Amino acid sequence: MKKELILSDQNSSLRIRKQCELMSISRSSFYYTALGEKPENFQIMGIMDKHILEEPTAGVLTMQSMLRAGDKSWL
Image 1 (spheres, rainbow, N blue to C red):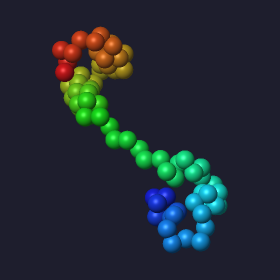
Image 2 (cartoon, rainbow, N blue to C red; image 1 turned 180 degrees about the vertical axis):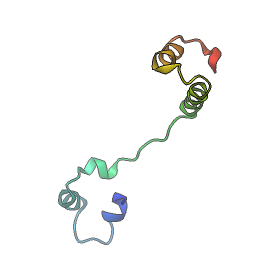
Image 3 (cartoon, one colour; image 1 turned 60 degrees about the vertical axis):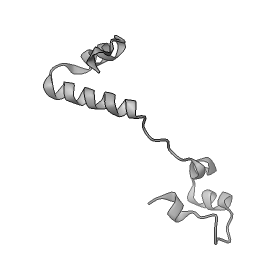
């Protein structure tokens, strides 16, 4: 369940600090909002998925060398 649904800073007699304490979570995790993935990462993940489907025996070392090479020909 999302923490926003459980904890609230509105219409509550308890402050956020106390609510977080009772739920055993840090206040920073209450206020934290995750950033989304960059479009470039989705593109790279798609290329990696395609490569693995085409060459399932390639393995991790091949992927690492492909990414480290700095050669953008696989894009």
